[in-house]
Length: 333
Ligand SMILES: *[C@@H]1O[C@H](CO)[C@@H](O)[C@H](O)[C@H]1NC(C)=O
Image (tube, rainbow, N blue to C red; front, side):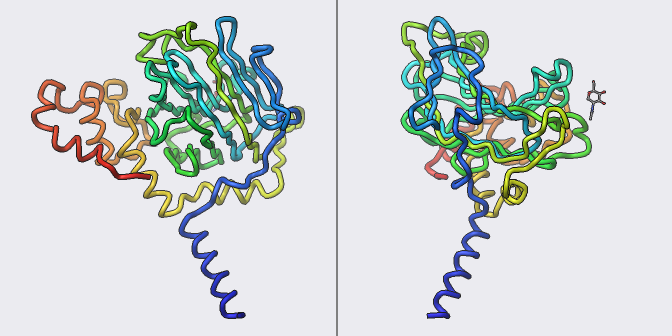
């Protein structure tokens, strides 16, 4: 018996090591205690359970909320179900910012969901700004391996003094490691957490080609299980005080396990459609933190040769059809 239980303990430790930190079971924040509505009056609705929120965009207004506290580092997460059907021009944003405190040198960490003419094909964009580096976008865009309008999925941001990692359902989809050469471009001042839905007609879908069509309104997004697990900063004393266990959880989550790294590679190979690190129209030389991965570069060249400086589109079908279908094959996360 003792041998068996020792064996089970060993196995669970081993499984923990192999699968890495999990974003499940983090403390859930109640809306009333942790957030304040920003705009949208009745278009923000809190369910009776106190932890689920409905955000609506209609012809009158979008809606949104902000955390009551500012944080310096932490794990931030929400389970989100996006508006279904036609959603061109609609933007749902889950992000951290201190733009209201630092007009000229703000920081930002963004998950942005960009609607599309066919409801299912939402795209996710991630981005960071540090100390007002808004002239240098660090955008990445991807599609998803599921229909995000069908069900709730967990979107999480890890922010430490050395890493920013974006997760979808516990799969890391992007890792930014701080480098000395990034200087102030790595977000490093306390930020609040925001969630908003708004009319992004000017840029969200195909650079603004398709605006929001209010014939399909209201656009409704549902959120639940909001997680603020980090180090809240006293606005007067400017001193961060971490929630119980947050320090260790942040450190654990920033170590991507080997199996999570494999999943991240598969995600990026299959689903990433844009990365600033490979956009030579925009940056003649990749920004210093970019780690150029030849497989990613090749895939993006095939996906979008105009942006990524590969073989022009008119030659592509003939030469690359075989390769393309293999890349878009049935490998799953
Ligand atoms: C951030 O920006 C401010 C104002 O532009 C500047 O004084 C400061 O040195 C910058 N900080 C870093 C870490 O780059």
